Image (tube, rainbow, N blue to C red; front, side):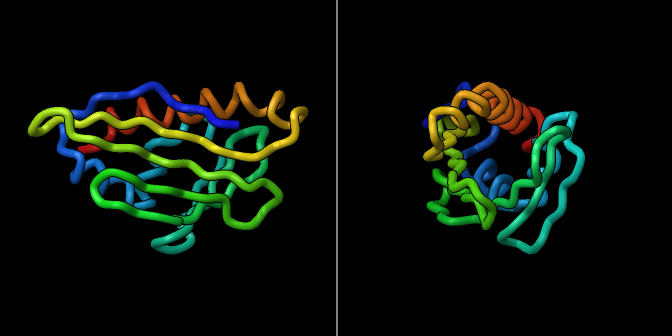
Length: 132
């Protein structure tokens, strides 16, 4: 399964957006309103839970400043990645979108496609609101 969020334009340079996203504590401000738990484990790992879903632990897997941040599932039964793509479009303006990739069976894909699409859309929209 491969899902992309809408592209959002942020009135900040790609480096500022990259620095914001690589600091995992900032993901708390990006989460949907129905988040039931957010815990920063260390500088590399955080976990969160959304009402009605199991806890998910994400770890920084790859950074390519100022354009790519890859977070991946840490432990658990599902293997997936969440990648932020950031690019400058003007001097102090950048474009960001998120890509979710996971290898799931067809039944699981059918069950999680809608909620995951909504989740990454919310994250992307909240980056544009919260990246200061």
